[in-house]
Length: 92
Image (cartoon, rainbow, N blue to C red; front, side, top):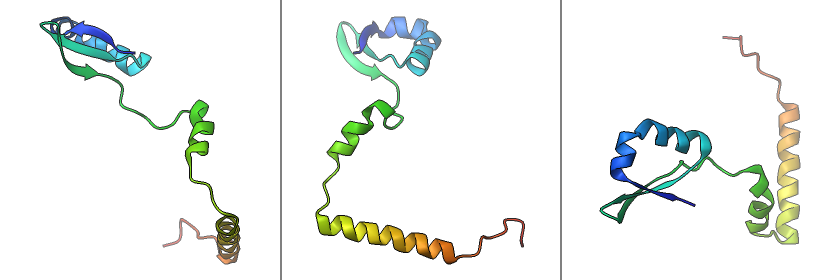
C-alpha cells in the first residue's frame, strides 16, 4: 500500500525516500495541492519464490499428447548433449 507524501516533503528528504523505496520496498503517492500527481515505487524484480505455486497454476495446461511430445523433445536434447564433446574454453 502506498503512503501519501507531498512533493515538497519528498524533495526535502529525497535521499531518505529513495532509500525507503530501494531497501524497504515502500511505495509513495506524491501529491501536490492535495491532488495525486505521481507514484514513487520499487521497480518489479521478477517473481518471488512464495508466488511460484500461483505462477505455475496460471500457466496453460498441456494435453497428454503435448506433454508426451515435450518429454520426447527434452530426451532428444539430452541425448544430443551427451554426444557432444565438452569444449575447452582455453582452446583458441
